[in-house]
Amino acid sequence: MKKLVLLLLFFSLATVYGQNPAIQLIPQPVEIQQSDGSFVLTKTSTVGFDSQQSRKIAEMLSRKLNLSTGFSIKPQQDKAGSIQFNLNKVPVTLIGKEGYTLVSSPKGVVITANEPAGLFYGMQTLFQLLPKEIESKTVINIPWIIPSVIITDYPRFGWRGIMLDVSRNFFTKEEVKLYIDQIARYKYNTLHWHLTDDNGWRIEIKSLPKLTEVGAWRVPRFGQFGERTAPKPGEAATAGGFYTQADIKEIIQYAQDRNITIMPEIDVPGHSMSAIAAYPELSCTKDTSIKVNPGSSFSEWFDNGTFKMRIDNTLNPSDEKVYEFLDKVFTEMAALFPNPYIHVGGDECYKGFWTNDPGCQALMKKMNMTHPEELQAYFMKRVEDILKSKGKKMIGWDEILEGGVAPEATVMSWRGIKGGIEAAKMGHDVVMTPTTFVYLDYQQGEPTIEPPIYANLRLSKCYSFNPVPEGVDAKYILGGQGNLWTEQVVTLHHAEYMTWPRGWALAEDFWSPKASKNWGNFIQRVEKLFDRADIEGINYSTAIYDAIINVSGKDGKMTVNMDSEVPGLDIYYTIDGAMPNTYSPKYSKPVELPEGPVTLRVVTYRNGKQIGHLITLTPEVLKKRVPAN
Ligand code: ACM
Image (cartoon, rainbow, N blue to C red):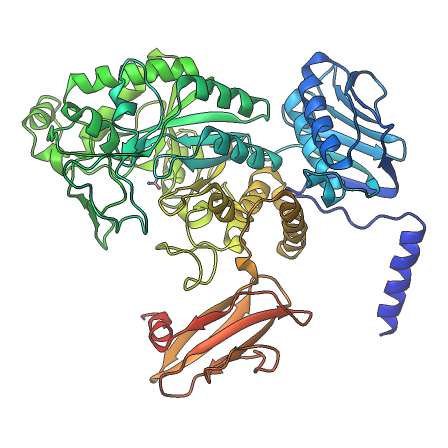
């Protein structure tokens, strides 16, 4: 008690004498030196930039400041702005291309970097130093205090990505820009744009107009993906959309202004039903009845990880016309996208239609192949040659390792980290995107209340991700990436819900020094960002406040363990059918359930207020939750 009183006294004195509360930022910077005092932004404050290269950033800053403060700051080429952006005349090696230093004192703020990217990131840090009301899009009258601090900051990895699947769900140009805005805030620098799949072809290819006339549209369907009804004969395909090349140029520029490079993906030779709907002759079956898939079931997945496609969604690797087609696609894409890579998919390609095809059989014989995997390797090498002829590098999902990897391919390790380790050991560059740590389409909390999908990935697991596995030379690991597949994501706000807060954890995995990571501290910073997101109008998941419920079984009895990701929550439960609240039993140790059909209801509280969702586990669910052993 005495200690507490002293502590409180210390903090109140500290406030009076100008000491600031601890600065809380995501991603955690490399070095923060906090000091007393602060700068207060007012209507007479100025924003300065020392060279034309940084003008756009100064303008971006001023626009955002003016929106919430109501000031009319106009950035000026200057050396003495209250907030000043400076580019180093002689680059400082330590901070590299994307690093920055931010010095704020009672006199103002100076952000210095070697390149505009660093200034952009310094600006993002500055927003998080300002009061959360800076996120408001309408004027708020509060003191705009910036605490005194010296920050030196630069990223751990050069590839800090998020993948957005726009095939399963089409997001408009404006939505893609909003998503880019959001990820840029947390110092991501790569948007992997999954532009094609079985469910829609989203990029205009002028020399192949049917790709978007036909391939971008599917019959309208609602409900759980994979369980929707198949297209009916003659039914109009009215749902979907695509980006014109003008749209794509606009989005690329928008992203570039935010230090985001867009890496496009054309997923081949599997996942190609939308291309085949447009040009059936590209497949082995040449089935003209194939339509763009609206989320109806066409595959079977077996326990040993193998699968079967009931409708052909693969390009024919033995047909020269397929390579002519790809040459056209990649010619136009190479001209559009400045990113050095084009992602060519390579994942989950069913070989069943190939093995029955005379052309593929002849090619296997001619090339002395013994296994159909080698047909995919052949295909991938041909694709790599096409890309190289356009000045692009090939990257693909880790299946491209099977049957022999293309000579210079970069590998995206998604089926765990195994493929990435193997590729790095062969001297290939790797981007780590394992399902186990970064799949943003997975549920992030209690399975009975989160939107349904077949797997789970909690925030704490995302936060524990280290992209460099033991025993691998770090120089081959370009970085990491979160992947948002959108089978079950049909609005941008739901995309936000799936991305945040997990995207904050990954941002820190990819940017911050490994040694700086600390879950308890991270959670406090996450809660600060929740408050900001509320003001900004960005959706996020609060699954971290929901109870984690595990059930074990022994001798026909079930025992329930409860926990929470956020430390220090109070968990209340009932097994008598009542609604749980603070009058209910408070969880303190594993609960052995009485025999009989018990329904468990659980809810979490903090400081006497409900904070988590109500979880109701029926007798059937409880029974199913006992792990098989
Ligand atoms: C993937 O998730 N199919 C790469």
